Structures are given as C-alpha cells and as structure tokens.
Image 1 (spheres, one colour):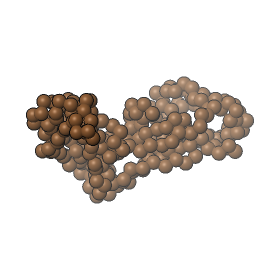
Image 2: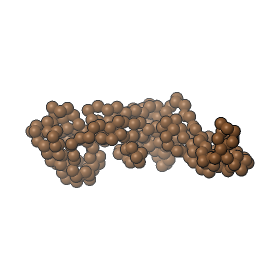
Image 3: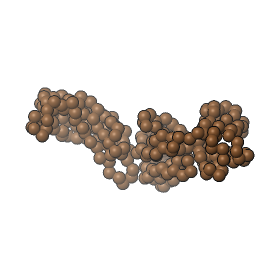
Image 4: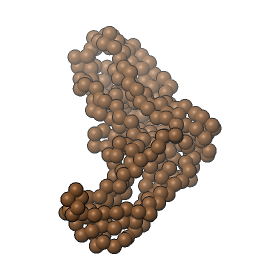
Length: 267
C-alpha cells in the first residue's frame, strides 16, 4: 500500500502554481494529494503528503503528478517546471488483494474477490457509491486469514450507475481501499419498497409488473432468510419481517417476468 509521497519542485514565475497526484488504480480520476507550488525559480520540497493507494497483486500502479494554474505555455518555452527527488512511502497490508470484480445476473450484482497472505486481518468492508462517488458502507465480512481466500457479496442492481470498493481493515484500525469497480445501472423500474428501512412489515408495490409469484430474502452473508409464494397478479404484497434480525437484506421477486432484486434494511 502506498501511504505517502514527497518530491522536490522548481517552477518559474509563469509555471504551475499548484499540483495534484492521481493513480492508475481508478483511471486517474480521483485526486489523492494536492497542494501549492512556489513559482520563484527556487527548489522546494512538498514534504510528505498522505496517500492511500492499494493495487491488485502483480499489477503495476502508475502515479501522475499534474501541475496547473500556470500562466505560461510550455510549447512556446514560456513556462518551466522541474520535479526531482521523488520519494514514495509504503506500508505492508494485512490483507493482500489478488482480484476484485463484479458481475450482474437477473437484477443482482455479485461482487467477488480473492485475497492472499492474510495475516491478522480484521475485516473487509464493502462500500458503494452512485455517480456522485460518495461511498457508504453496505456490508462487511470477517477476514478468514490464510494463504488464499475467496469472498462474495450480493447487492441489488440500482437504476443508476454504481461503484463498489473494498475497505481492508486491520485489527489495529488501520485501513486501505481497493480499486473501484463500476456497474452499469438498469432501466427505471415501477417496483417500490415501503418503508425502507422497515421495522415490522415491508410493503412491495409492483405496479404494472404484476406477474411475479414468489420472493426470496437473502442476508449479506448469502444465506436465504425467507421464501414465500403469493398469487400471481397481485400488484402489492406485504412481507412480515418479524423473523428477521436487524441488518441489510436482498429481496428477489421471481415469476413469469423473470427475476428482479431490491435491497432493504430491517431496523
């Protein structure tokens, strides 16, 4: 895991006055570190800037240092910026991530990842974001420890684009993030769940999609918590949640229309 970066810089008065650091882990989209640059033609050091970059095992990670807010044009030789004495700081991870990907089937997103050389790794937290890229936690699993372990996690396919990442957490509280995987959203559905979160009952309004005849509720651990049949043609059903413990669940509706999944939280 890359935990920090520092470098020396010399910029002319028309050169860049600020910089940003990005990486190939997410396609150079997120700014990992940023700061101001002295543009007085003297060498200065940025000091150690914190990073949190985790790549897949065996896959090189490329860093880019991007200078901006200059007034000159390099091609016309009216700006000059030099970078030297680059230092990267690293910390070994308690969990070595080998692969992480997502597949979609029948309205369900299935996340799968493979780890190796787990040594006293506390847990793996699954996080999700929409197009705003504001990540929130949707589940977690305990690290199994050992030389090589496989994991999976299921989530309902959202109507918009979704982005998933893993938070690898050590028992001492230190953590690092995996690469981010993107999933294309489905078309808008007429099915709605209310209330969500739900305490005792969950009302499912299927609108025009009234050709479902059964449902299956699965916990974040992949275990089936409840199944039931209901008459095909019902536009609305009420699910009794009394037998479920608090947490996040995935409910899959099945019937002649195929299968469609949605997530809900039991309070």
